[in-house]
Image (cartoon, rainbow, N blue to C red; front, side, top):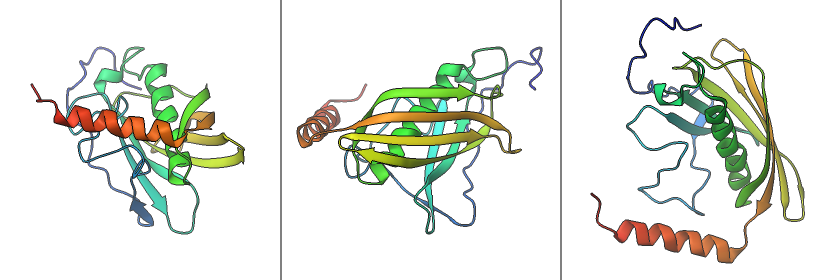
Length: 182
């Protein structure tokens, strides 16, 4: 547990070192991302909020990865806000659907918080598609500390996007790239 009398250090996330059988992947491509993509959950290489890195394991349908909870995720002193944990689960649970060829939005998210997440934790996650029912894609996952402590479990009911939504999202991203940056 963090010592609340010690001020939080504003350092960046740790270097992501994948397990030996992990291969980097980008689950949202080719649907939504481009070279400059930043999301609410993973806002780029700088900042102190969240960082998510996605991987596949050989012969495994699960999406695995790491999520770092930076100082800007603080809720209770020294620990990540539950909303930050839920946001990371939301993205990972949707990402596994994309990885399996189902571009979706999360319509219902259930997160069971099992333990508080200390600031600076570089947790492992594992998500999988449980089943597909027409336009609904059910996904499940868990978030685990480096020491193997279960931090959270999640279930999402995702709704598949139509081609018109995907094209609209691509157009919005393209328009954003055309704007001058300040």
